[in-house]
Length: 273
Image 1 (cartoon, one colour):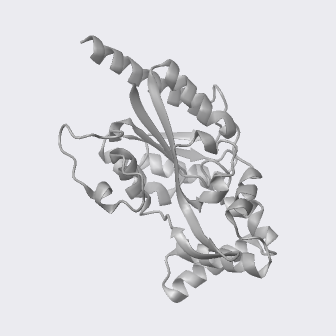
Image 2 (cartoon, one colour):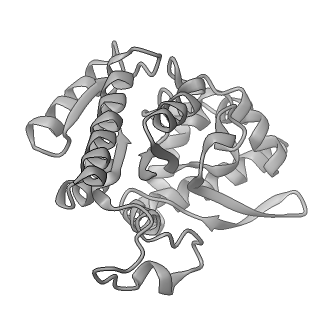
């Protein structure tokens, strides 16, 4: 079977805004807007990567508010996330459609959100891998970042999927040069990335330069989101701009199914030739 990899940002792509904004930050008795202002100020003041800054401040504020800091509790917050329409059954539906067309569909999350929240979502068992921010837990605290995913290092995870070097501790595998005839897990031309904004540009660019596909999701009714998507398209950053509706027969559903069918026809042609 031919294999394709669908790779997704999370915040703004599968749900509205940052996942932490829905319930977690308010449960820490914090104003959402003020929290993110503090993250930016902390980053500038201490010259910290913004993703590490948010991870540090979030853990600190959770501890101060006596909100349990554990994998299990983050899972619970993930279970309660309000996602865009159709997201919960999207992953299985697309996998099943792929099978019917002799295409193996793999799903990957590449996000600056929290791995353990994403793992709590109903669809998580349909994911092949989650690359997102994660803590090392000890004595009821998140004592250190196990993984930090920011806008620029998202690119490495495309290469990990491409080469099949999935373990983040595997530096040799992800940097290994591949020659003609070497095993490739998924060719770049069979990879699609779903994002929602300018922080996804490095990831879009890698696929654009390697004959993959890039899709910008915009939130219906959100003028800023639509304008960003239009600009990314006019600048040649993405191949498609689609609204945030993942339900069966929606525009994005039809788009991905058409891509799968085209891959299936190409496979059939190559097998017959």
